[in-house]
Amino acid sequence: MSAYDAIEGGKSAARPETSGWLARAIHRNGAGYLFLAPWLIGFFCLTLGPALVSLYLSFTDFDLLTSPEFVGAQNYVRMVTADAKFAAAIRVTLVYVALSVPLKLAFALAIAMVLNRGMRALPAYRAIFYLPSLLGTSVAIAVLWRQLFAADGFVNSLLATVGIEGPSWISNPNYSLYTLVVLSVWQFGSPMIIFLAGLRQIPADMYEAASLDGASSRRQFLRITLPLLSPVIFFNVVIQTIEAFKAFTPAFIISGGSGGPINSTLFYTLYLYQEAFSYFRMGYASALAWVLVIIIAIFTAFSFLTTKYWVHYDD
Amino acid sequence: MTDAVNDMPGRGSAYPRLNSTLRHALLIAVCIVMIYPILWMLSGSLRPASELFGGEAGLIPSQVTLSAYPDGWFGLQVTFGRFFANSLIISVLATIGNVLAASLVAYAFARLRFAGQNFWFALMLGTLMLPYHVTLIPQYVLFRELGWVNTWLPLIVPKYFAVDAFFIFLMVQFFRGIPRELDEAARMDGCSAWRIYRKIILPLSMPVLATAAIFSFIWTWEDFFGPLIYISEMENYTVQLGLRSFIDSSGTSSWNELFAMSILSLVPIFLIFLFFQRLLIEGIATTGMKR
Image (cartoon, rainbow over all chains, first blue to last red; front, side, top):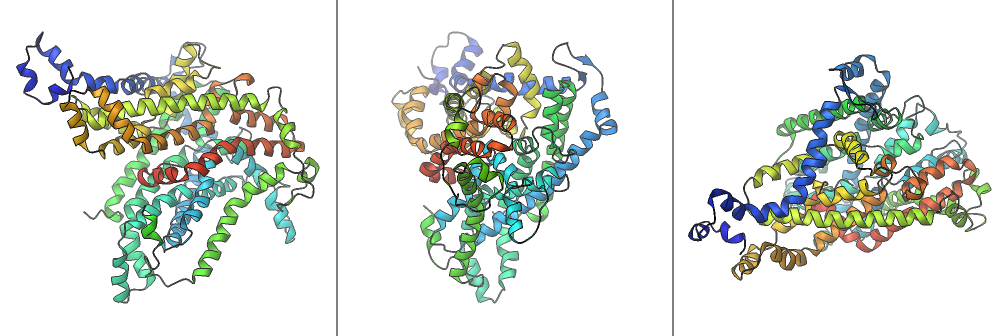
């Protein structure tokens, strides 16, 4: 007998049940919970449980070998008052997010708009633009970047041909972070594909009508494209920002795990990694993780609050 | 697909018509900038070490040699063959886990009815936004207690519990689009939920299962953080960890070998891209996949 019979409501009442509500509840919900079981186990054992434990650990000193020692809010206090590296990590990460996300999305949107206008070879272009974002977080790409911007790397030999002697981009704290921003912008392919999908939803006759009324292309962009695309823009901003906050591999490989030179590429997640797995300050690292959650939550909440001013959902 | 519509001339033509040749020239220029670094790495892997060291911007090596490939392959005390085999095993097992678990759970959410369904669904969506860093340390402690550190289990087993809610979400969206009449008819004929899942939902969902499998494979293949934390012995390294060791062990003198191994590490992803490009692009366009 199938659990489905129960879904039909009345039927199960007609069948003589062995015992009371429990059997009925199992009969009615059993199939659903059986299929849900892998996720439920994972959710409690690998997500919710660990998250609560890490919240507790964030109020302790814990070195993995001896049991955690409760220290109150000390980790959080130290973070904001006495940890220069934390401040550096926050600064580096915010600069990275603030530069890479808008640049990447502006580029993605510009290319998507050029591509959207009745292109013959659209699939070919789209594929090529997408490739870098697929290869994206591989160590190989970080290796490549390291050599592109090395003192004797590709960029400098290109500059040398026009007589400019370039600095060592990755080992100069003034430039190192920007090489990572360039890497992120290079991977504009996936937001571009999302923009393309969004642009296709805008009816062509809106532009035709606007043209007939003599609206300039700038005006059409501001009054038609941007408002109608705003939900997609919003989506891309939120997703890309969260991803940027979580960036790790390129900074790790390019700086050799140090976040240097002089903490200039000390991404937040890299700092968290160092605290947890180089110094085994697991309590402090847990506190760092929760601060990251808070930062992302504040950013997301703030984005949602602003939607009513700029995101247009028509129907 | 919608490509047909998009290829019609004049679509969205309200913008001042940029000369079509000019537009192609611009796009081709951008393409070259995008692809050049990868080609440069490929050409670097074919150069003798002495030549690359000078930093050569051109693509044509003065002398082509394949020696960097075998030299790099055997450049560490464990060969890259081992790393590739390890990565392949981990990625395949993780992919099976992801697809299997996510499809079961997505079926429950999309097709079955049970008490608390909406509550669990909301929680599942909530975990999409949660950075993995919050669960990182307790998970590490847990796996350490289980004796799983320096094994592949922490990289594989969680996938069988559908921890990546993204795949569940992807499949729920797809399953909801399958006509309900099909499973209602099957149910009338006395099919169990399991049979409906096996005989109706799965066969009709090949595109989404393939998309999930492809992304799952690529993400596991490219994953660096997980192996970095859990794998300590070189015998068990993945390709990504192998590359990282290669950077540390080789000075600037063997960049060509490092490039050769880097190129090889990208080959599986590149092949998937060649053959399944359409699924990848549709997957991103419809769900807004992050990369």
